[in-house]
Image 1 (tube, rainbow, N blue to C red):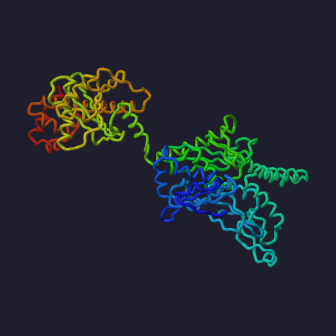
Image 2 (spheres, rainbow, N blue to C red):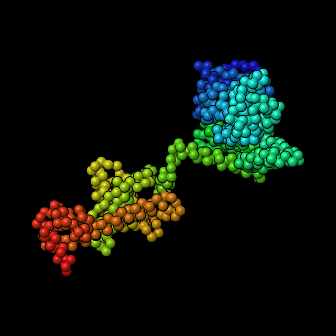
Image 3 (cartoon, rainbow, N blue to C red):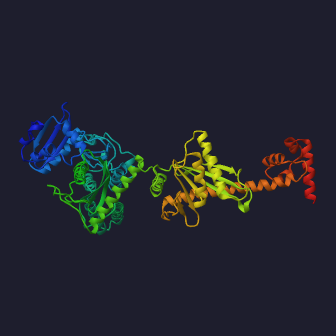
Length: 601
């Protein structure tokens, strides 16, 4: 294959043959590698078409100063060459697999009495490499299986024939515990050792059926010779192999070797899941992320992933299952979209993994940081709010039986209660049980204070009540000149109706909606906070009345006593010296005398 160079103006001179094209900028930097069934038509499409071409592609075309082409025999050869060039050079406009991990392999060394051990470095001539494995755990599972089935040495001794003959070595602990048969002392011959190695190779290749047949045959041979202990050992190994195969997700024994690829995308990224099926079992699963560069189609992205993942994980499966249709058949690849049966179930399983990976990436990237933001976005949509309601304040009144009217305000930040921002209010300007006037007072006091202190206003105000309480709150906002600057709604308890100002008809949010549950939670928290405060006020008022009925004890003294002792009972139980220290000797004497008189009555 020879490379030829052209300028962008000479694209019409390119041959109508399959090959790979490379674009360079004015700094001789490789910026893009592509493959084509027809180099002339494909490259021309960049310079002739304008309509429908995205800005990234137009920007790349403006940078091109030189085109290099390499002719190949077929479109599939172009695919493979393109993959190798992108892996090696990683041009800035090409799709890149976002996966910088170094995967582990198992190596079968090329030496006398070969070893099998993990490695991340591939050194040519050192031995045969199996893998890569998608995780260390998956690799260790295979290694543990092999070491459980076969007596393969773990030492790094040079077991050449003349060194064994010279008796340079002694057996180690592995021999004494039965994990090695002592080839270092000549206790096991290389021919017998290599029989185990051959079976281990079948397992490393995923051909578990051959290894199972081997152990089954050895078990039957031992049983026929009445060597029952030996037969039992082979049966145990067969059971171990079958147990491992059961863990590796057997799909269907009739399904042989195939690869499954599925893709899901968003505006900027694509996520591709790969399942490798060997002898009816899933023996590898991997999900990768691809960053879009030039507004590529799903089929272009998926084909890129198929070529690179099959190359990376050394897959030569004759059949490939996918979840999307390709516009044209891909030469050299047997790609199908199954509609029913076990193969369809495999595609669905792969797609499920791809979608889960996409969701996890979105969470990690902060697109949907957690449930609270999803709920807030839903609430924003349900109420048609301009801003995300990440700061919500809710008001409620409490004046049970018309006594001790109070109000509460609770604050939720990012969907969570901000307890330090909660506020209690004693109603000061309203006589009697008047919910509407009380709401006007507390809403006015709250936001007058925030404006004076130059603190941020909430993104949503919620009023516990219907149209009347909402209208009263609106009056307070109008007085302060902030009506229309802060969204305000009322929520009526009975039917969970949401009222907007100056709209006589409520809206109803779906009862199962997370956003309605958030509003209910905020409303219930405001109600709880108001009721709790009202009970405290009533209790203090009741206790205070008992104390102020004693001649010489005023409301100030009563409040001081209750604040310190908390209850009449504890005041009665207190020592005179403690009371004197708090309110003085004279008042203490009056108080004690009055309390004794009351208890005597």
